[in-house]
Amino acid sequence: MNTLQLINPETQIIPEVSFEYFSDFAQYRLKQMETGQIFTENKVRYSAQAIRIYKSAIILFKEFELLLQSRIKIHEMNIKILQAFERFLISQTSKKTKDYYSKNTIGKYIAAIKANGNFLHDEGIGLKSVKFSVKTEKQPQIYLSLSELQQITNCETLTEGERRATDIFLVQCFTSLRHSTLKKFLKNPFAYVKEHEGKSFIDVIADKTGEQCVIPLSAVVAQIITKYNGSIDVPSEVYMNSVLKTICRKAGIDNPVPVRITKGGMMTEVLVEKFHKVATNTSRRTFITIIRKYIKDDEAVTKMTGHTSVNQLKTYSQSTKVDEILPYLNNEFFNIEI
Image (cartoon, rainbow, N blue to C red; front, side, top):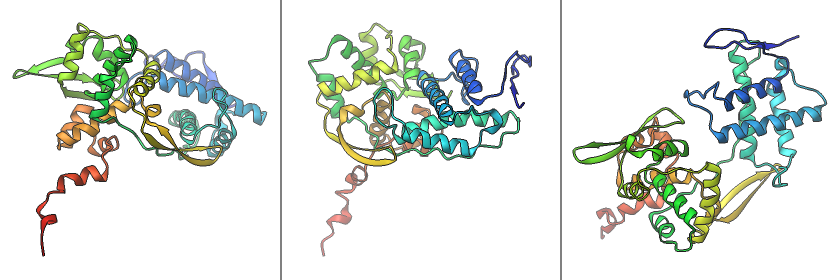
């Protein structure tokens, strides 16, 4: 019988844990993620969102095994199993929405299962490297303009809770901090604010990547910190993603944006009101897109956002070709007369 026996990397003591079946191993790894016993490649804890994806992927993999009427053993995991699992996901509908899973959702579930396969290969138990391309669908990524941020700020119909969420979101839009790092920063901002020649800046380590982020302290962020007496409890990312849609709807952020969705193997393109697509990660694209209009040094911007390369930074920027050409409208070349 082929089994995997795990060794504690700290003590090298072999615990009383061994696995024959892949899903049992994946379930054990999930528990380790939840309890902080294992970390990402960047040596930080797995986010709540990542854990939710892993959990859903394992549930679906077990349903896949039920369909096969056979449990997948560890040594049986290979590309053919992943391909079959992908076909299974394409044919399934979400119990929550009653709709087919999108291509991107399927890609996340495949990636979660594949990650466990890669770990097994690294442990040297004879599993061949699972070289399986995770298929995702590039979606138009949105950001909010300064005028749209002003619309949100000026909206008079927000509840007290929505106003607080708006302030938290504005801090994100003027710092580019991801939710997990933002939570740490706003709990005790003054621990991360430093001064240089009379000017203040934020110096914080990003939870997701472990990279240092050095961001000039904007007037907007300073005012919000003062408003809440130097400490703000940030709600969960799930709550923020939900309430931001309500806030933007009330503020009239409703211009149509195209969305491409592949479900059940069929691709469709629909127009949705913009507020439906706003989430906490919109703030990061907002910061990067706007600041690159003011600061032309992309290397400097990467030091603020914590990106490791300019190319990585540019994937977040939503500048259009029109934006890039506008500064040249008055160029003398276009005023030549013949």
